Length: 89
Image (cartoon, rainbow, N blue to C red; front, side, top):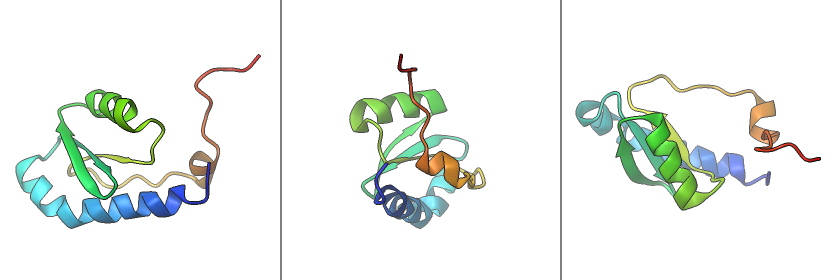
């Protein structure tokens, strides 16, 4: 994973924070995608949001966040050591 992923994700989070209040008023409990600092879509489930994000943007980075939920802090190992989708062998 490149060193630019974390700063880019920070920009996505900052963009979300800029629109969070309005989202919490109109879309509380929904799932949103922020990509390239733009709100891309609003979904009823995480699965719907994730499917769309992967189809459109591949591995990212992009932010999928549940509106109204507190932010999740991931350990650095998750940010810098993604799990392979399949085992090599």
